Image (cartoon, rainbow, N blue to C red):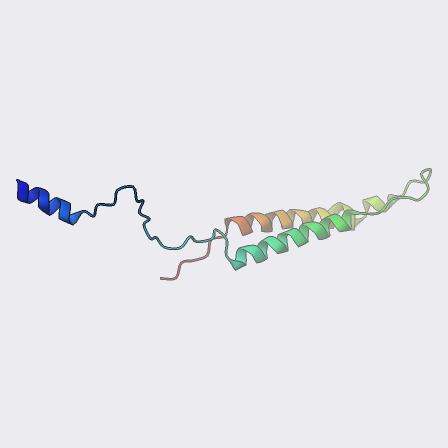
Amino acid sequence: MAEKKKADSAAKPVNKGVKTVDVKKPIEMPFVKQNYILLIVGVVLIFIGFILMLGGGSKDPNVFSTAIFDFQRLTLSPMLILAGFIVEIIAIMWKPRVKA
């Protein structure tokens, strides 16, 4: 019985009051370079969409301008903004393939 205690105590190092840290593999970032590129592309698309939506107003408040109903403001810019948000979702959800 005493021999078993000696064998157990010899196998376990005694470090009283000392915390040990396990060495693990480095922390992987959640995004890679491609994710950041897609995020930037999405933000640029959204920004361009909002810029295209600007304007079309009248300088004279008594005169109505129909320029607010043109293709650029009514169709193109909302499509660009929507495309930008879709690219943003793809950029967040994109996970690179693991090389085998």
